[in-house]
Length: 207
Image (cartoon, rainbow, N blue to C red; front, side, top):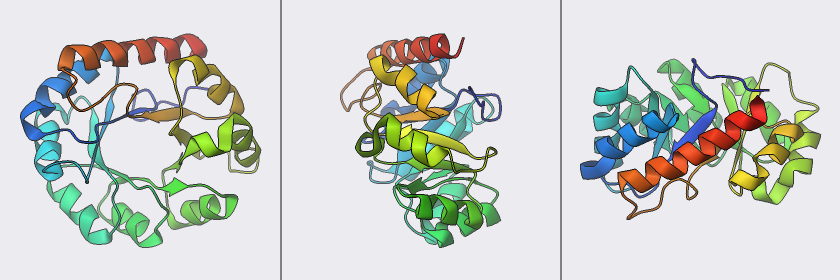
């Protein structure tokens, strides 16, 4: 099932390593390809500047925010830069709580049922299963079976166009996509092409 997020496909573009000088052109290419959720990991060069540029130009067209958010202070920094999306590789209840306080969208990384339910209890909006490649579709299916119907799940890590259908059938609602649509050094045209191909495959599996 395709659970849209504020009208956007449940697809998060992960731009690890992006630099501010290129972020607007790449953001435009992603939006034109059909991505409406954009994440700049905080271990990228000058990430808050990139987030600010994206939020200023595309804040009314896309959900913009940060990945690799590890502390409540970083939540404040991202929100101060105009970001709304707070994505983490781990499950930290203080980060989730601060995200809720700042009216952000909390997407913590979880791996086990224990982490998943702790994140839900703390107020997470969506669960990011990471690294999904270690679970595989069968692992996601097993955990999704015990989660509340109201919580959405994104598989992140190890998802490619040929396997989208397998993950969706297993219960993943969407995906966080990094190296399949963005690599450092790729130009906006290349990124747009790869992103459009992913969107097309995703839509076909949901038709």
